[in-house]
Length: 79
Image (cartoon, rainbow, N blue to C red; front, side, top):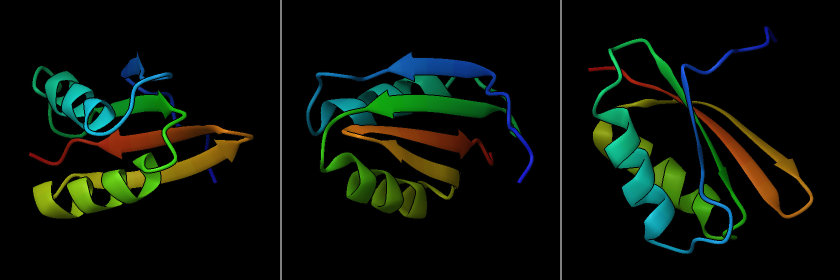
């Protein structure tokens, strides 16, 4: 898999549902279609939240990586 360089990064460590999703939604607004957002979260619910949010919004969830308690999500803006 190619290394993806995100266009924007947000740190949601220490935030719990629904804050990481709200921050992602806010961070996606200024991005252009095709640009990629990286979000870091240590909320155990964030994996399920991100999957359902991207399904609902139509944005593309490119990757979910986990390092210990920390999740790293890559989302491509689609529209």
